[in-house]
Image 1 (cartoon, one colour):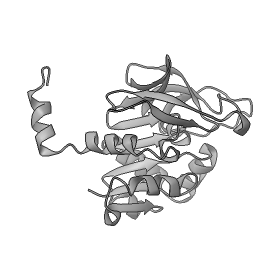
Image 2: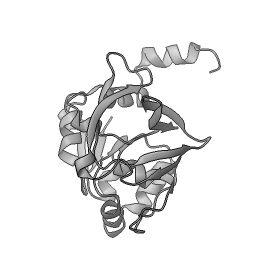
Image 3: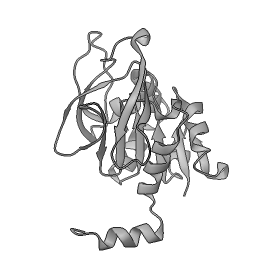
Amino acid sequence: MKVGVLALQGDVPEHFRALRHVVPHERLLLVRTPEELATVDALFLPGGESTTIARLLENGGLWRPLARRLGEGLPVLATCAGLILLAREIAPSPSGRDPPTFQVVDVTVRRNDYGTQRESFEGPVRVDRLEGPPFPGVFIRSPRILAVGGGATPIAWVENEVVGVRAGTIWGLTFHPELSGDPRVHRKFLAEAFPAPSEKRAQARRPGR
């Protein structure tokens, strides 16, 4: 298993450091080219500036290869700007300069809907089937999930508000687990993307499978 972090802009070092608590260093890769993207078995899309990341994906020849890998079922954990780039729809923002998206996660989001940098906050997040105390969510100029369609399932909440969804092999979060100092979300995502043989057998025995 090789795990990549899209390394064009944003919280790249933070994701890389978080993953070093979960994945051996030799299996981690910073992804900047189509050739590097082709070698990874899972990808983390970091927070940052979604319009800038979209432009860099296109200019670097990564947009179409990433669209193809997403269509093939590449496991992806996308945070903040990463979720915006994967969303089915972006509600128009006041600037009117919203980026194109891959439209693979059935949600409608609005950029920066929790406020400016000064309105950033931390709060307890309830993550589905995550053991231990509530996850320490970090929200920095985060998008808000306005609607969840039938192709996505909520997996994380602040009180009753959805702040994370799953769509097949993709997780999309409005908060920044890489800034929390808590590797549980990274670990859980990879464990579910690549279950151990004993877990695969357990899944096969569960009703409805």
